[in-house]
Image (cartoon, rainbow, N blue to C red; front, top):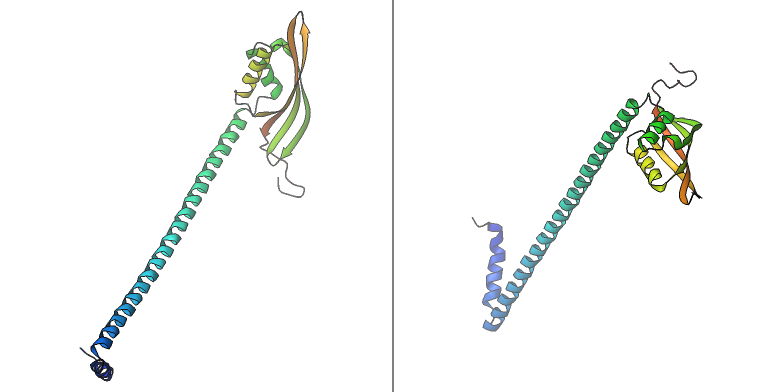
Length: 200
């Protein structure tokens, strides 16, 4: 169906073309073709730009989702690690550090060389109690010291060796070590005191 309101424009266009010479008519047709190609090219470029923009937004959203998934996995792993540590703290709650150090020294064959395990200070943060000890191990070889440290650090007891100092001497031509450690032992405080004025 041809709309009647276009008839005057069509008639005017046909009249204009009819009055043109053959050369002008060819130039006019060429111009129309160039304009049409330019318009179509512009529409194609615009479409490609919009498609590229959409793809860019999709890529950004996929990256955001991947980051969220990674954070969720990290949080889940962190929660599992916290649960594991709390379970270990509860399991070792009845064993104090001096007793553990004696067992580790005996396991390493230096039970008689463990000179002292002295409590120095106690601090509490939330429901976690930290006790710091000074530990002295005397007249041991380098291999014995390494064996003792291995026994202490691989048993799973909730502790941290904060620093270690050694002094070297020679006895009967043999090099021996005297070692001192600062060790923190951790414990869950199940029945922490309520704040003043709070409900027990």
